[in-house]
Image (cartoon, rainbow over all chains, first blue to last red; front, side, top):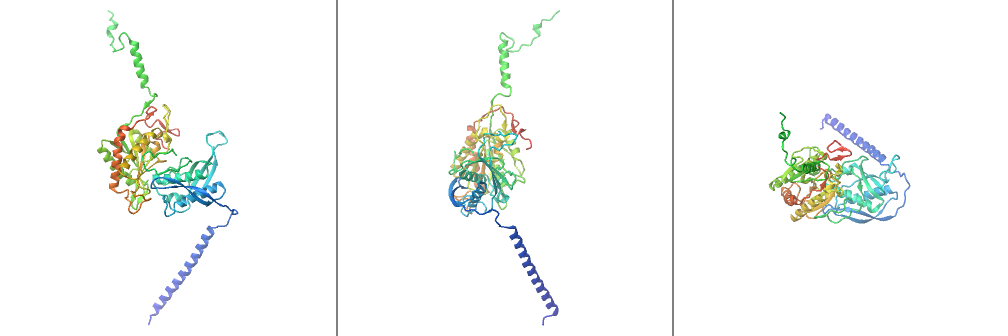
Length: 219
Length: 268
């Protein structure tokens, strides 16, 4: 014979459990709807067909400091700044693959790439810095990418050289690169390689840098 | 009685004689040579090495392992290297010998005042393999006597010497069969150093595999640090006799260098 107070207690607990389950299910639906609303994938621009093309990626190797050009087939947008961004994203995605020789964490890395004609002149001084020509690429990296990037002199240098080399191979008109992180100037990539300077863009492919007299042309 | 004037004169050697003009000309030449502004060579103290253990204080550097920070590894390596160099007759200046937080400008200023024969900036990383040597990314320039040296380009005049120093250390590391990567890096305070300078980064010792595998020797391993330290100390003994100072503008210490029009050492 079960006492009455135990029956009441059992019923109350069961009721509580059912109520909690209903609230949980309701909140779960609400959270799902909220995320779906934030992830609005409604197309803004009309989709365009673009055929795959061969592009060169300058891939770095941590173990010997080498940077080798490798061809990939890829469909890229035609608008230059979007194209540059997609190219860099593809390059950095390669480094997130399991057998990468320069392992980086996965995830979006480049927020935007802005291309500016050189020389950069103001209306007051139209003839300033006449030696510059070509284009300046301003690469706006995501803070999440910078936060997760491995820290070290060589590993950070290789990431930057790899990006510069890939841009050089696919955008010969780009002659200089500046880096921003979340839209702001940032001291270093992950504590070592400086991001405040303007980097000249040139061919960065090279063999193993494993011995004396490995110095190539200054970057 | 009028005293004889010539009896009160103090005789000056070289000026009282038959050729006083010649003596004055020689004196004038000495004075002109002593005036700052003439090209001069910046000398090294060949027994002095500057070691800069990177990071410190709140700037912890890379997370090498769960409870191992880069700033601790660089300091341990610097202390070990100081002992090895002192045993070989060098005087060693450390930019920090505790957990002090110094800016890169302060480190460069300390190093530039020493006129050392070599400046080594020590780093450590969990990425890559072996020892990484890096010199500045600046272009090599021949200094223009009398022209001010830009703070951000102070290393340019020493770049050839820095590369030779890197070659010397690379050869010693190769001889010790330590894996090695020699590169250039955009790294502060390398660009601000007025001495043959390079960054030495210690990475896990792996056998040809990228990244630190489970069988890799960690950078915390005292035996590994000792091998690297001994190779570097051996190379620096040779370097002591081989270093050649560049012909520089008159040495005025760090005050010669300017940063965006500000004197060196000014708060950016």
